[in-house]
Length: 191
Length: 283
Image 1 (tube, chains in turn blue, brown):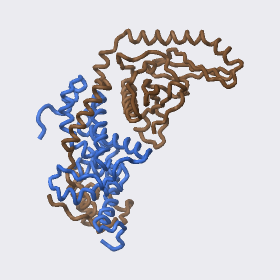
Image 2 (cartoon, rainbow over the protein chains, first blue to last red):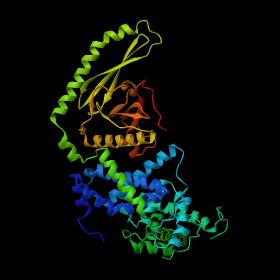
Image 3 (cartoon, each protein chain N blue to C red):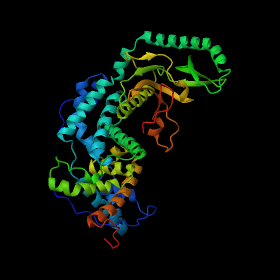
Image 4 (cartoon, rainbow over the protein chains, first blue to last red):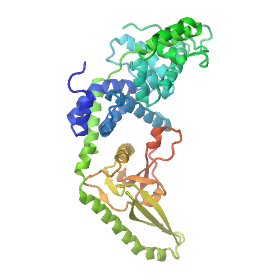
């Protein structure tokens, strides 16, 4: 449970130049922002870069926040856009990051066995989606945001979110089925 | 935490035109904003929808059970250090703070320096004509004059080479003539500096007025200004790449190639070696 001033009040103080308020805000959201960035970027190094850029953008643009959405939603919007930008840059030059399946397992996961065994599969599956589809699944299914919140974060209509979610899950179902078979090929039999 | 089995459904062929797939997707994700009774009735009445609902629900459940990702202690420390350093080194301050720092005298200084530059170029005009006369392979001479135009500043780049003098109008956003001196370093450091400049340019564009008040900023016609051709210059900075002086022009983004709103707003950086105004590609 969050204690202390709410996010909007902290943001007002950030605009006024209060660095401590920024630190509180960052500590409050850094893990979730990192989580979203990790799922989108696919490796921890890029996710850390994206998280850094997200909070620097928040700091610079704090005065542009309009209370039409929660600060957290606005922060997700910045995070997703930052990830999109970084992905575009990575596409323009050869990737230096390790493949996601070589990424070390999350040492803070509740269940290490579960993390080691299953996390690469989740991320490998997410990596097969386009960034637009990936972001919808991450925000909706992984982060548990409502569809209007996802729409707000991604700046698209709710109908677009629903449509992307539907198609992304279909694609994931095929990929996850293949991965769980361990064959890496399309399963030709009925489910 | 117990993870559900991987969903083994294969995507079916549920026709978007015949079924409310959006409702099925929202229902599977337990979205509170939908008419659950209508969704349940749809799934109950339509076998294809029922199958699709099961697939969508399984994937949603599977994804929601993914282990949480958190920063490690080392990553958290690194993140805080880097952000703290970036804020301090690049003097990123809130816009309120920046506005309060801006002094009226700075505006007058900007106008005065621009006017002085116009006078300098007027005096050099004849010199260029003479120099160009017999030279067929000589080094290009380049200078720039500036005059105020609207809210920003417009520069005239005059290039004299091989006997010809050409004048190109350059569009400088307000504040772009005030250039910042950066520390420089290797390509990675310079890239970081450029990213900061681009972010700053976005801030300035949003604020709609020149804001920066860095103490070490230089007001003068930037070298290599003619090389930016007809691009609108938002910010200018000098730096060094592996010890070689360079100049960075942050210019307004061109029409987006991919049609996205974010890329439409994104300025670009053009980098040149000050020594010969040749373009620098940081890769």
